[in-house]
Length: 93
Ligand SMILES: [Zn+2]
Ligand SMILES: [Zn+2]
Image (cartoon, rainbow, N blue to C red):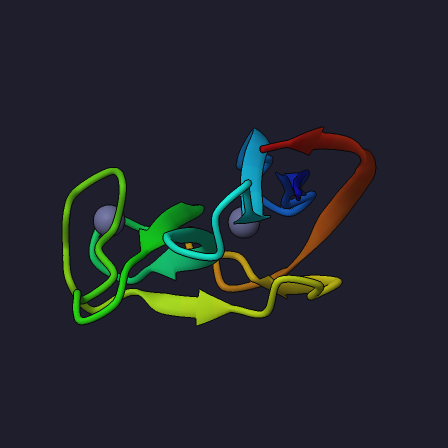
C-alpha cells in the first residue's frame, strides 16, 4: 500500500496536499514523488517499466525524483527548504 504526503513550503506558502506515493496492489506501476523544474511544481507521477516519468502537471519529461521517505526537498517554486509530512496512516491501494 502506498501512503499520502503533504508538501508545504513556509517561505512562499506553496502547498500540495494528499499526494500519493508508493505502490498499490500491483508492484508496478507505482507512484514516485517529484519536483518539476519546468512548471515549478511538486507532485507524484506513475513509474512504469520502460517509460520516462513525466510531470503530472505539465507533462515535462525531466522531473527530479524524490525519495519516497524524504523528509523534505528544495521548494520547486522558491528553492528554499520545504517540508514533507508523511501520513503513513493514510493509505491508498
Ligand atoms: Zn517555496
Ligand atoms: Zn511540470
